[in-house]
Image 1 (cartoon, rainbow, N blue to C red):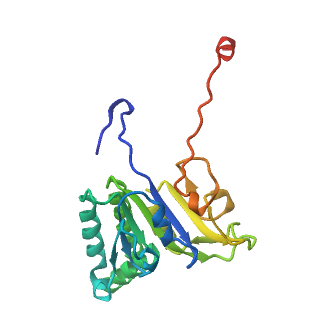
Image 2: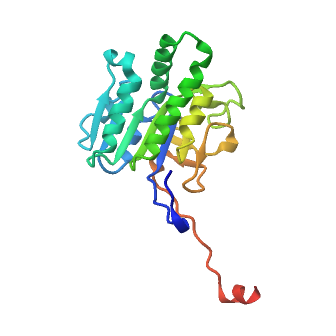
Image 3: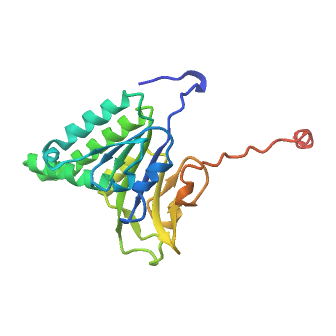
Length: 232
């Protein structure tokens, strides 16, 4: 356990998790991040990144599936130690979860604890990402829960993951949002009060345009005037 005296905590790069329907531009958001990116593609939706000189892409192959947990853990850890990479991207975590669960199911004689093992693996992955010193971006598909009022941003959508696994993994993330299309524009819902999976620990924005994802707003500190000081 690391100990920081007198609040001298070292800053940790931000972690972003965005989920949404296919075609809403989750992968293309990678282009907003500055520096060299390493993209782990678990659903082979990397065509949008073709020609981008600031991106290296590792695409999962069929032969990798039986050992995907060890492969991902090894390659992600190896990427942490390389100064070349400023940003690590996991695209798409829904696909990764399904592959990991299939492997756990196949190796288990007692299926009752499989989801617990799944949650633990993703929690460990999330902790490793948090401790990496890199900016992290992860994506996932969405699922329509059938709840809410049927509007595009009003409480009927969630990330397409086992809920406890989602909570275990995204507890490490600073921003979780749902990307969607409306009137030809892309938006990201960051407001948990809408009922969708969402949070924003970086600033107080609740709804943003997709191309403003990284435009973190600094909270203004009110200056205390001399009159206010005298009143106290």
